[in-house]
Amino acid sequence: MNEHVNPVYLEDKLDEIRADGHLSYRSKSLPTWCPGCGYFSMQEGLTIALNRLGIAKENAVVVSGIGCASRFPFFVDTYGFHTLHGRTMPVATGIKIANDALSVVAIGGDGDAFAIGGGHIPHAARRNVDITYMVFDNGIYGLTKGQTSPTTAQGFKSKTTPYENLDMPLHPLMMLLSYRASWIGQAYAGRPHHLAEMMTQAIAHKGFSYLHILSPCVTFDKTDRTYGKLNMQVHDLSEDHDTSDLIAAMQQASAAEIPALGVYYVEDRPTLSEEMDEISRRARNAPPIAE
Ligand SMILES: Cc1ncc(C[n+]2csc(CCOP(=O)(O)OP(=O)(O)O)c2C)c(N)n1
Ligand code: SF4
Ligand SMILES: [Mg+2]
Image 1: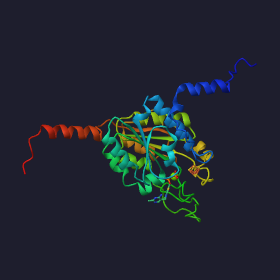
Image 2: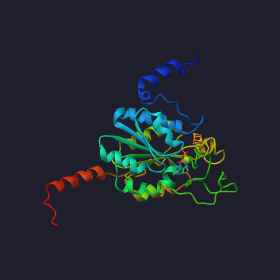
Image 3: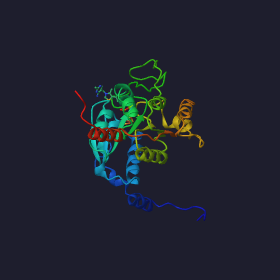
Image 4: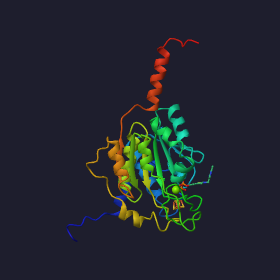
C-alpha cells in the first residue's frame, strides 16, 4: 500500500459523524426535497451550527413561510412555526420579543423573502431584532414549479417568462446592507463546510443576522443557477476585507455578478429587546405622564 495514502473507512466515518451529535437535531421526518436540491446542505449546516453552539433543542425555534425552503421546520427536531407566505419576519420578531432566551432562525426562499415578504425585512433589520434570517436563493419559485422570482436572472426562460425574463433582479446583499442588518454574509449550498461555518457565525451574532445562500433548484433551473456554473463563479471575499466598513461591504457586494462568499458586514449595536428593556426601566422609574 502507498504509505502516503491514509484510507478512510466508511464505518469509521459514520462513527465520527454520529459521535459529533448534530444528527440529534434532525427530525424523524425525511426531507421531501428533490434529490440534489441545495436545501439538503442547509439542513446539514443548520444542525451542525446548532450543535456547535450548544443550543438546546427546546431553546431553538425555526420559523418558515411558504415554499420548498419553508418545509424546513419539519426536518429539524426543534420548535418550529410554519407560517404564512412572506410572514416569517413578523412571526419571528414576535417569538423573540415574547421570549428573549430563544434562538430564533427564520428560513425562506427568494420569493417568500423578496416578493410577498419584501416589505417586512427592512423593519426587522433596522430594529436589530436578535434573530437570524437565512434566505435560500435559487432564483425561482420552486414549490409552485418554476416561475420567475425577484432574483431570477434577466433572460432566463421560465413558465411565466417563456420568451425571456425582462425584469432586472433585486440585489439582496445590497438591500440588507442598506437596511443596516447588523451581520450580513453569503454562502453557497455547494460549499457545505463553509455554509455550516457561516450559519454558526450568523446564529452566534447578537442582533439581526442575514445569511444569503446561493442554492440550485435542480428540477426547474437547468441553465442558470446550476452547480456547474456556481462552482466556477463563487469565490471567497478577500481576506483583508474590513467587516466594520459599510461602504467597503457595498463595494464588495456590487463588485461581481456572483459576489464573493463570506462575512460582509458586522456591527455591534443594541438589539430591539435590549432597547425595550431600557424603555421599560425608564418608564418604571419615571413620574406618571401628565394628562
Ligand atoms: C398568499 C400566497 N400567495 C401565493 C402563494 C403561492 N406560492 C407558494 S410558494 C410560492 C413561491 C415560492 O418561492 P420561494 O419563496 O423562492 O421558495 P422555493 O420554493 O423556491 O424554495 C408561491 C408564490 C401562496 N402559497 N400564498
Ligand atoms: S423544486 Fe427545486 S427547490 Fe424545490 S425541492 Fe425540488 S430542487 Fe429543491
Ligand atoms: Mg426560490
